[in-house]
View 1 (tube, rainbow, N blue to C red):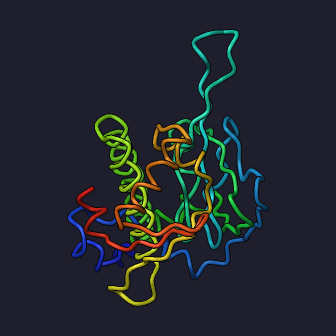
View 2 (view 1 turned 180 degrees about the horizontal axis):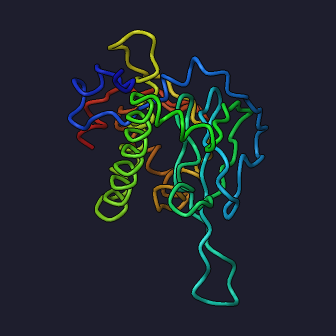
View 3 (view 1 turned 120 degrees about the horizontal axis):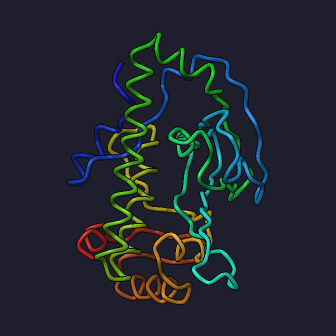
Length: 235
């Protein structure tokens, strides 16, 4: 069984979709957990016990780095956003401990897949093992794209790429192949977006307003309508 990758996304954009999910795990009665908005699913430094598939809602992952100045507070950075059907917790596979906090941005439900059960299942079912490798590969590619974006792109391109990535991930969940998600509700704050993109809050707000003036998007609070994808894709 191949990973559940949206075949329509690659035709729409040059970059391959990174939306991969544990389709084989759907038939296994893993327990679930509800995480209320603002609560942590797991915290940085905790031992890796499970990986999680988001069934509904959204999470942000936040890493904390010590300050170079002992008198200053540690630096925090939003390192990712995780939506329905996406997997959380893989940051702990290398060291056996989570490298970030996973915070619910809204009331969310996750499927809990204990590592002690997942490992023998992957050994027994080649398709599940392949999907796990594909999910981990997608995380590596997404991190590489973020590093490229932070290192080379101006603010306008970063925000445009963020919106396109968000829409692409919604596209991959669409029931009808080829459908495109044009109406987005951003569960994260503009401050979260800025932290993720390496931009100040004011820069994010100004850039979104500029994209609206140019006719690429429509804005209404956290609601964003993509009016012209081609304009966003060409920044």
